[in-house]
Length: 156
Image 1 (tube, rainbow, N blue to C red):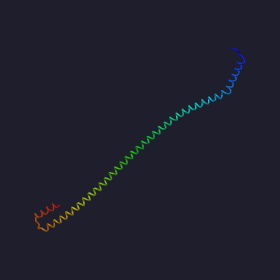
Image 2: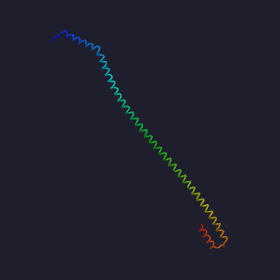
Image 3: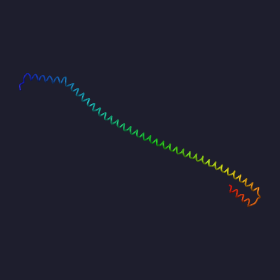
Image 4: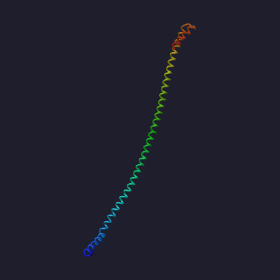
């Protein structure tokens, strides 16, 4: 191997290329690589944060869903309680109305019974007066008197 001027020129050019690359090309390239590494690290960190945020959001959604179900169950229970109250109130009102109707029917029955009794009294009075008239017109005879009373009883 012969060292000649070409080899020295090539070595010198290579050394200048290395120095030039080290001085002017390497720093921006390293800066770009470091910037890229930083962006990748930030992206990974953002992905981790997003995963954590997603997990927290899913947890919040699950909690909100549990609360909504609990509230819905509470509303349903309140509706059932209100329905039972309305049913109980309707039963009480129906019982009260039945009592009023019964009282009205009883008063009508009493009224009809009183009218019937009054009518019966009038008829008995009329029959008694008619019987007395007949007794007074005829002679007083035990057998005749008894026959008239039997006839009156049959008419009653």
